[in-house]
Amino acid sequence: MKDDRLQGLPPVIARDTRLVVLGSFPGMASLQAQQYYGHPRNHFWPLLGAIWGVDLAAMRYDERLTELRRRGLGLWDVYASCRRQGSLDQSIEDAERNDLARLKLLAPGLQWVAHNGGESARALREVAGLGLTVIRLPSTSPANASWSFERKLDTWRAAFEQAGLLP
Image (cartoon, rainbow, N blue to C red; front, side, top):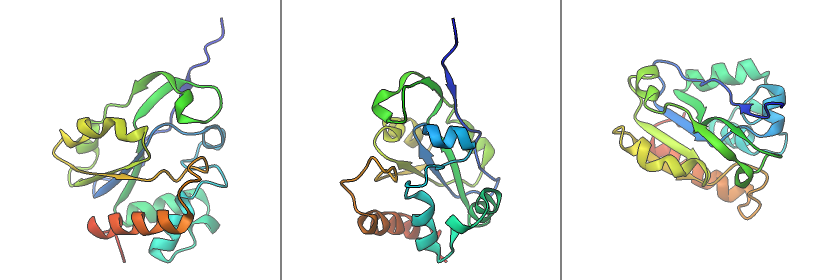
């Protein structure tokens, strides 16, 4: 029998990371590209670009990650692996969590975690239990059509300001 278990992406975290954005689990476009927020309609890269005044979407992926690390931002997901048909969070089954306690080991100066959407926020208490300040942000996914780009931008910008990640 074929193993249909999907494996997530490794963390993008530097020792001096101050804020980590935690997603739930990469969508199919992200898994195929082996890139966080790889779906062309996901608002993640355009939002960060608008917040920082940098055209992240025009950069190569490795350059985007360098820019994130330089600014004290890290990326990871709540789930390490799962079974799922398609890319929607509600289709996640048999999920195995990442060891979120590793966040403090990977980034000793980490102070903030922002959950990108509701499925990620299911781990909110676990992350708060690590002594970190936790923020729940609206999902950048194209499936979150009830929030306009501008409304997401205002919320994300306020969180980045609070965490000290604005230029």
